[in-house]
Length: 302
Image (cartoon, rainbow, N blue to C red; front, side, top):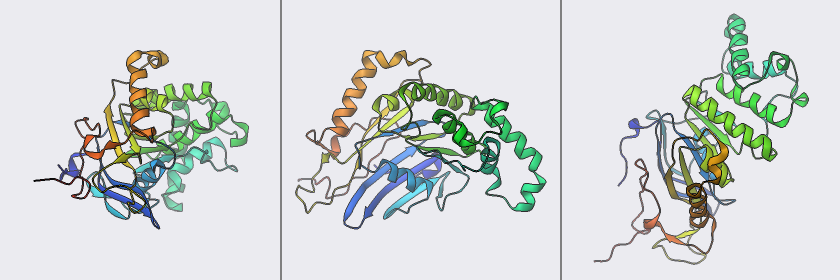
């Protein structure tokens, strides 16, 4: 049944639809997230993972439905929602220090930035150290850094504004496997230190299962009682909502049979276009999962 108490959650999404022209991308999305969760989002290409993230960020507006942050409907992007993209969102003409400082300076007036100049530099230096960069890196420019270092700067840039939720859109997708695994462990360390709420979009099932405390699978591969055919404008839904074990401190868990089995289940449920679950049969067993199917999606016979 619908959850009517968005104040109970940090993030609450209710009946979200997103349509581009005649193309329905997101189809009646329902989601509630508690503060402190590290949520990962997976799904096949084109299912709307990044679209959902942009809706939460406020970069785009839903066709219909509501999104609440701390019980208030979201508006345009603000410092309550930090973001890290796949391609490093750094200013190429600014040093590491100045890039991180911009996370604090941009929302403030010129006078306020001048008054707080020393404090902002101290805070930026603190977060640069938190992401395991050294004082020798403070005055380097982005082109002088490796891809992994640039992404750590981008994370520091997002963290300095102390967002209520950190949105990450394929943040490690452009990195080599070794750097990617290092940053997965690094993110877990930062998450545990900062007690942050993170919404992490990835196409990598292993990455999602490894770093998350909760994993959502979006997919356009399902069925319902609306029927079939080109006339049914069906978008992606949350087809699975898994509560994951406590965050692992070692990548060895990736070889555990239960870990491998979970990935196999998600791959079938979300990525296999021949495996069409009915919407009422989705694996939504997480305690905070809820679903608001329409009468057309789940017709009842008497």
